[in-house]
Amino acid sequence: MKCPRCGREYISSIPPFCICGEELEITYDYSSVDVRKWKRRNPGVWRYKELLPEVKKIITLQEGGTPLIKARISEKINVDVYIKDETRNPTGSFRDRLATVAISYGLPYASNGFIVASDGNAAASVAAYSARAEKECFVVVPRKVDKGKLIQMIAFGARIIRYGDSVDEAIEYARELSKLNGLYNVTPEDNIIGLEGQKTIAFELWEEINPTHVIVPTGSGSYIYSIYKGFKELIKIGVLEKMPRLIAVQTERCNPIAAEILGLKKECKETKALGLYVKNPVMKSRVIRAIKESGGTAVVVNENDIITGEKLLANEGIFAELSSAVVMPALLSLVEKGIIEKGDKVVLVVTGSGLKIGEGGREKFSIGGTKLEILKILEEREMYAYEIWQALGKPLKYQAVHQHIKELQELGLIKEAYRKGKRIYYKLTERGRRLIENLE
Image 1 (cartoon, rainbow, N blue to C red):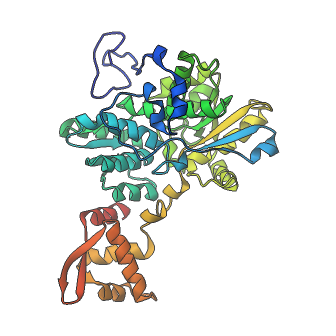
Image 2 (image 1 turned 90 degrees about the vertical axis):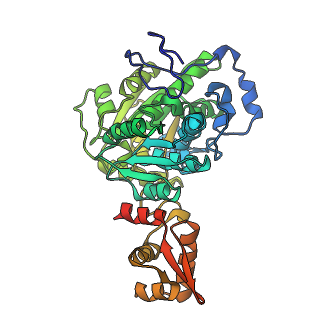
Image 3 (image 1 turned 60 degrees about the horizontal axis):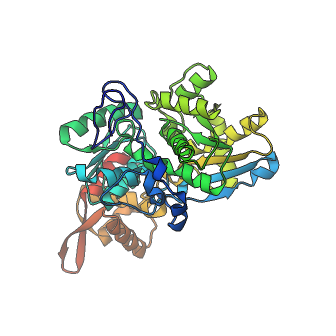
């Protein structure tokens, strides 16, 4: 694309701003889009290919097309509330929408691999899609990151670099590593190509219920801006008259976007909702414009309300990560203030799974307890199964140790070192060593 101000052309990656300072935004030939074609295609991100960048090869894990569920809380508050469950994406978060487009588009430019700076979800997604594309992946994550997400990165074979206390610092470092090592940078704060995948949630919501309000957990602001862009494009192609009101949700401890909208004191402290811990969001000006143009607002929730939100979503049958749980207390606050009322159709966007925040991700990636002990034992020296069983020193059936060993082999964390008679000796793989280093 070309910068509308200075004419500078961008091909391989498209930054949020041109070097002349002009804001960049990817556009399409909207007059040629026929939405009737969408209905003849399978659900998912690439259903909307006319409004996505052209790619030579699509790298997909069947992301998008996530469920929209009518919330039971609707009956209690007398408002139609729907939950867009992004936890159903392949790696458990909305970032899979970003990864499929960013990796597919960047493939011709990623001879040395991909790199992303992230607090967790984007790193896990990019690691998965890089693996699918058979490309090396480097992820720069802050020192504190949810263990479930970290284990996903390792399981997908990513090379993990821990840097800084927040994602802001990780972004700067990834930028330098990208330049020095010729890596294709898909961090949305440096390359907006992946945001085109994220916007497809707006197309899905329009096809499903055409909501009046969309409530979105907001850290960097990339998702709420993506949703805004998606709805704006629906208006441009003439199928939507009015954009839904967009609501950004942040925490009291980290509220740079909400503070400006609501006229509050800015806070940038670490929050238990780690995915929302972004001190200086690059997308801030875009997000504020999106919220104002849509007639929306922002909501700030306290740390205790985050836990309440997690429980309320669990009552709906959805296990959300804490960064997503903020949408439920935000909804209740908006209803109490009369901003949302009877007759409205409200969507709560649940961006990531609660399975990603604890000791493990989805069960097949869960490395804790006995498995972690086995890895630490093999860190000392190569051993065969009976020696491992003895070294564990706890009441555990010998057959159970064999099962743990088999599963660790399937995950690529240990492998056969050599055989001596009938005994098979095992050792850590490089991936297994990286896992231990990152969990200690």
